[in-house]
Image (cartoon, rainbow, N blue to C red; front, side, top):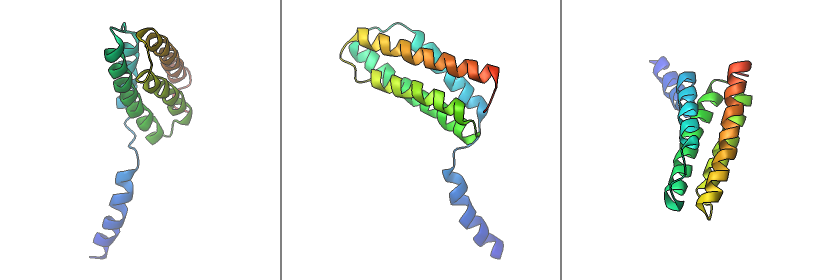
Length: 119
């Protein structure tokens, strides 16, 4: 019965750590890249898209952190912050520029992923 106490203590701590699901992180990164490449239709739609893309990139970042890939997670986080910033821009043109910057960051992350992998 003592082992139940150990499981009860360990389970909450492990549930709080990000999981290593590398494939999900890569898919989220690809999804964000394709969304960032889409044209900005209007101000409100662009803002909504920016916040949605930031959420997708946060998912990718969390997966890469869980897989102990700090450099990759850092690149993805920079793109996520830019996408989040797009959610608060004052014009559709500025959202497009911010998406271009975030897209550049996601391409850098993909190059890092393809070049050196998880580091």
